[in-house]
Image 1: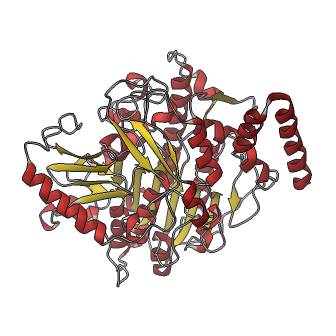
Image 2: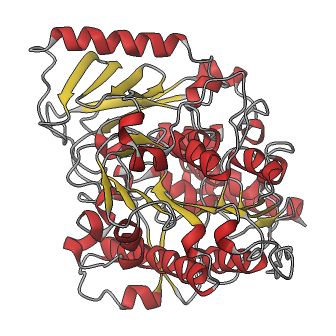
Image 3: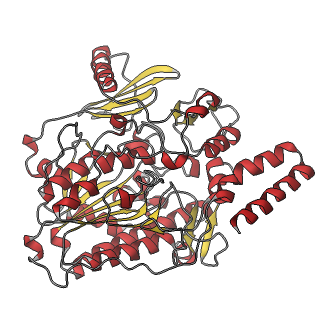
Length: 551
C-alpha cells in the first residue's frame, strides 16, 4: 500500500513535469520526496506507562530526588513574561515564570549549541558536543538541498551546498549520539531511577541510537527534529505558513503527525501535540509516584510548523498579526503544560523533592519572521550571538534551593547532567572530560566553584564566554569580535581593536579547546548566511552584519 501511494504521487509529479516544465517538477519532487518515503502512520493507541510499586519504600523526603528536565524547542529569550514576553508582555507565562519565583533563575544561562541536536547532545551527556564529533545537526541531504535551492535571498551572500561531501554522508538514520557516550538516562538508571523520555529526540533514529536503546525505560515521542502539532486540516488547528522560508515549506510537505512508543511503528497522537505530551508526562508521574524517576520532557513547541489550537488562538484576539498570534498561542499551550506538570507534582506530594529544570535548546529562529523573540539580544538560532545561545534557564528544587535565587554566573546545558548526578548521589564516569558543574553547589556555595569559560564550535565559527568577555571568531569572512559582557551584554560594541591582549588570550583558549575536540562524525553539507539584526522575511540591507553557519 505504501509503495502504491509512492508510485501514485510520483506519477503526479511527472504530470506536473510534463505540464509545467522541468524545474517545477524537480522542485516539487525535491520538496516532497522525504514525506513520500516515510512509513505509514497507524491510528491512535493508548499508552500505559509501567506502574511502579503500590506503596513507597521511603517517604518522599527520604528518597532520592526525582529529576525532570523540560526542554522547549526554539524558544526565544523574550518569549517568557519573566524576560519581557510575547506581544509586549500580553501573553502571560505564569507557570514557567513560577520556576524562577520558587527556585533559581540563571540570568546567564546558555545552550550547549546554537542549533537543536548538538545542544541536546550536550545536555544528554554533560559534554560539549564537539568533544565527540556531534558538531552538526543530523539532517537529510534532501532537506539541505531544499535550503540550498530555495533559501537564496536577494542582496545576501550565496548559500553554499557542498556536493563534494555527499559521498561521505551516512544515511540520516545512523547520524546520532555515539554509543561511546553515557546519556543522562544511562547514568541514572543503574542508581535506581525509572527513566522516561517524552517528546522530541533528534539524537539518532537507527537501532541502537533511539531513546529506548540509550537508557530510557520508556520513550513516547518522535525521533526526528520536528513534528506536526495537528493534521493540517484539523478543524481545531490554526496554521501559519511562512512562504518566505524553505525550511517551513519542507516541514509542511513532509512532517507526519505521529509518535512512537518504545520503538513501535508510528501512530497518531490524540489532540494537540503539546497537550498530548503534557498528558503523557502526567501519566508517567502517576505511574512512578512511589519510586525515584527521571523524566526528560522535550516539547517541540514553539518550533515550526507554526500551529496552534483554535481555543488558544481565540483567547489572544488582541494580537492583530496572524503569525504572531499563532506563535503566542503556542507559547500559551507550552506554559499550560508546564503548569500541569507542576500541579501534578504538588498534588502527589512530590514537588518538594523534585528537581525541575526548564530551558530551551537554543534561541528563537530568524526564519519564523518575528523580530522581537530574542530581545534584548542580537542574533538568532544558528548564530553564536546571544540571541542564538542565551536561553531561559530555570531550576526548582524546594528542598535544596532557596526561592527567588538569581545567579549571574554563566552556566550551560552541560551543567544539567552534573547537577542531576550530584543530586542523585551518582559518581560521574571516569576516563573522559565532563564540562558541567553542580548548579546546586553554585547556588549554595558559590565560592567553592571556580570560574570557567564556556565554548561553542561549529566548523569555522567559534566562540568563548568568560565572566567578563565574549569572543566570536569567524573564518568567513575572517574576523574576531570581542564584547565586554558586563558593560555590553547585548553585543552592540565590538572592542577587539582596543583590547588586543584580551583577543590573543581568548583566541589561545579557543585554539586549545579546538585541539581537544574530535573530528566531526559526518561532513558539513551546507553553509548559509544569516543576518544578525533582522528576521528572514525582511529585505537585505547594505553592509549589515551577517554570519555563515555550517551544517
